[in-house]
Image (cartoon, rainbow, N blue to C red; front, side):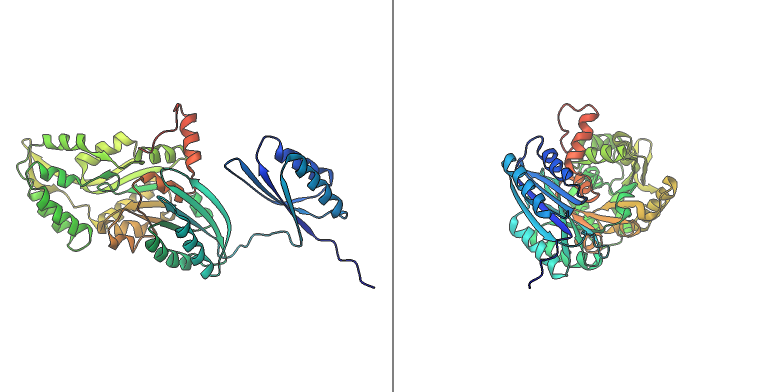
Length: 406
């Protein structure tokens, strides 16, 4: 005589159909009448189409519940799938990472390649969340089953091949503990290089730009390059500093990022190999708490071609970051550093999260991750903040329409 099969321990119930108010309520009322326990829930809505998955304990008369759930689904005009099984869907605790994928655009072929490389490591994608749909597409993957460093190594290669930005971080409390953001200025916070803008007033922009590029790529010593370039500015009227400041263009997304993260209690600092006559004003304008840069010497209203005091170079930037972290009272693991050139290497290495922003190869290769889209606020997606949350906060603070990424 064949024994009757054992009843399942759990039921995975999936409801799919057009979303409208009351669907979830009606579905759970059916479950409530059967006295089951809810073990896990996932729900998403894509273009007003709802997909709801619920894992519940199986009642003794699970077939009766199946019938009732199917009847409820039919009444709602939705399809229902019920999968019998066992286990309570406990989340894997080892090898958990957040993989943030940013594309402009994000093509299916590229995403397939990323998913394939994740599978190659033996990892599993447990959950996928959209962080932004414009002006870039940002997707956050919850991944388990592989070491974070291994994933980062594998996916950095695929990111380059697919033209994507991919950030890989451990899925732990540190992602929620970032409280100080330290930014480079030239070609990071702002578009362009201030020293080249100053040199343009002396008719030497192209000559100085060649030296700047070599220094940012790490081909020549930064301090030597800086002093040589500043010497070419000798005799310029100090009024050109005001003219340059007025001509500066901020990187898109700067104001959005600062105001959003300040709402969450973040502190900001800018550390620059440029000049305090510019950076101090930028800090005041943007609501940035700390600023450190070189000071141009001015005598009788004219630039002397010299720097006052020690040069803020590669090592100086890292020193400033550590001092600012101490002033804020946060560990270095709670610091995000963002830069684009070789003189930012030590600063990014000192931070808990070092981000190369549209950076030279020498920095991209050393950073924890890189962002190559032209919107600085895309960095917030890496921190787990979605575009919808940003816009909701802006509206709550009085914006009549969602603020653009400026």
